[in-house]
Amino acid sequence: MSEERNSNDVEDKISIKEIHETFWRCRDFELSHLWQRSIFLSAFLILCFTGYGSLLITMLEKASLFAYANLLAFSIGVIGIIFSCLWIMMGKGSKAWYERYENAICAFERKSQYMTPKASHIGGFHYQNIQGYELPQIQKSFFKGNGGAYSPSKINIAIGQITLCLWSIIVLFHGAVAIWGKDIISLKAFTYIILIGGSIVILLFFCAVFYRKIYWLHSKTLNNE
Image 1: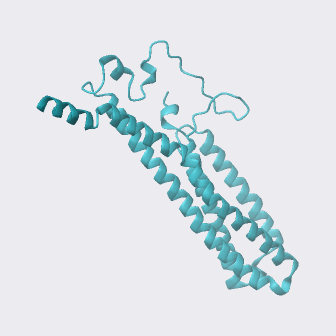
Image 2: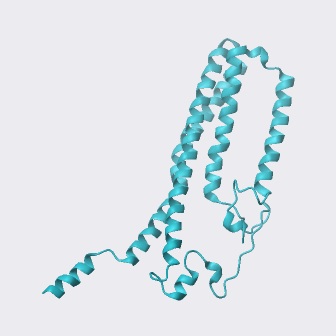
Image 3: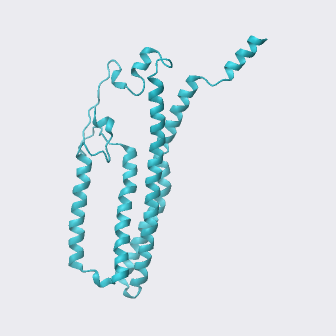
């Protein structure tokens, strides 16, 4: 009777294998929902950009409504900053959780008391130790079909960072117009600011994309292979 009770107690306890499978399920859940969570906020950002565009048209076409439209544009910019910050926090939070689960899986699969010697040799994402494994070719060229050393989770966060910068510029611009009036807007100066500023932004962006040691959008693991 006592032996039967002991066997039932063992069956009721959580096994090491079940814990390992739970870590994998949690990691897969965070990865699969990484972009789905951002889609929720993207709807609000699209509404903000749409509303801002319509207000810009009003400012250009109706001089009598310029001051009101400018203040509304400033307000939309503030809302855009808030949603951009939420986007970044959501992306970084999701990334932090799935990295925790990956680290737990790595530690789990490298321990000899949990795994067989052969399994621990290739466990913890050490796929390069698998006999016959060939490293796929990685290229950064946008015009080739090979895989690239980029991190989807970092790209997701970068979208929020870029929109945060855009909305911050918009808020500063409309705040300056509200304080000093629309006379500060010179068409010639404004054109130079847009052209020079845009060129600098594009240059910095492509430097971040193609320079290997800048890990803003790159995966360190893939870059070091």
